[in-house]
Length: 291
Image (tube, rainbow, N blue to C red; front, top):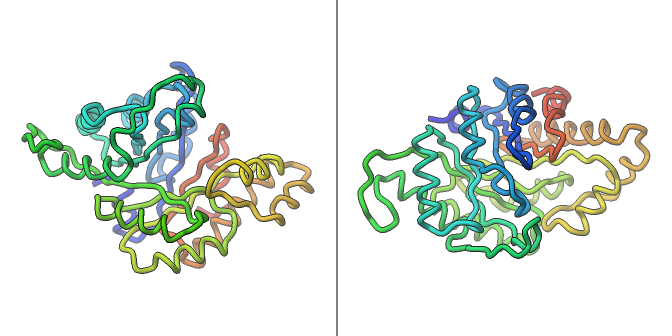
């Protein structure tokens, strides 16, 4: 049983952080940042060709984290692989003893650094969850028996600010039926958004980890409001960032305050921190949030 699954079953406040492989083969900084939260986080997510850009694979990086004594969360998208490749990737994760898997559909290739690449999308996030559940039962998608069976703890994503939210909740239900045991949300900055989301999903039997992206500037907040689907940064937070002498530290403070409030109000079962290029700040956020 993975550390993340244990945390949820013990009703502990679960903590994960996202780490993106660099463009190249030098993973030293990533491993250093991951080790800095060893014993504090229950999992380290590794992005899978994040934003449709070429990086080292999530699987290879997860294996390195595992070897370093850390608990990886394998992210896998349907954008770049057909069902044969996805099944093979999951079996390989099982060989490496990687238990946590986060299923994603994936951003369009035109948004990345190889815009001419042909997307696959043979399976979406719901399908990937179904495949992982099937493989965990001892057979592949076609019912062929496996010699050795991996055990996965499956997760998925959700956007609490999505409009209409009812569509996201319908998708959540599909993902839960497909095997998802936990959800990591898109970044949330407005506590009322989280309150409303949890009220509307209170009857769902799942664990929710609220997504946190620390702001670095008011411009970053405005950009996300304009360009990132499902993200809303309130005006008062933008003004607070504008007036801050040290923008990065203020962004960390805002993130920590939000985590504290969400935890105190019981609005989530955990937190997922996405520092986006500033992973060295994750321990500071945890310190200020009292975690």
